[in-house]
Image 1 (tube, rainbow, N blue to C red):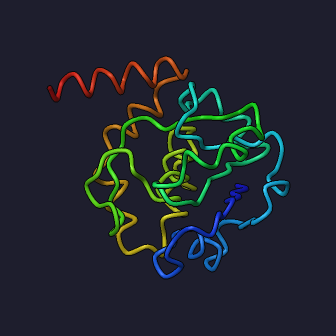
Image 2 (cartoon, rainbow, N blue to C red):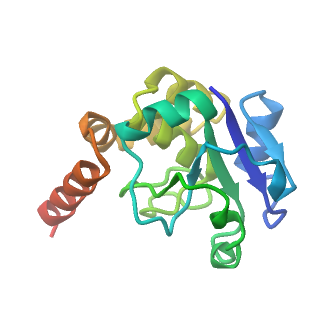
Length: 171
């Protein structure tokens, strides 16, 4: 599975999950926006469409592209978000990384990539990419029911429906 991460050099390198993913041989880091593979699914928190099984073939053929930047600076990364027609956002999930533990929707890069792989039914790859992170298994355990439900949804609309039903049940 091809995983590429555009690294914006805005993070604490000691806590950076994408740098660790690269050291573990699980992704390719790029620092030049023009090195992002065309046709890949680009994770974009502002995308109108949620990742779903519909994206299986794009992930299989071209891979996933994550953005590693500070959540405080993400809106300034507009050029990154103009690169592909396959922009996808992630549905509601809870972060388990040490920096944002327990915070909804503020995932680390490795959590976002893992969630994308899981939702597009590359479940073994989703688990594998988290190997090497002490807390990686916790992400899948805490979000298991949601990830399963999202992965069973065939379309982006279905994923959003599952998400909304979950959120309404918690009100």
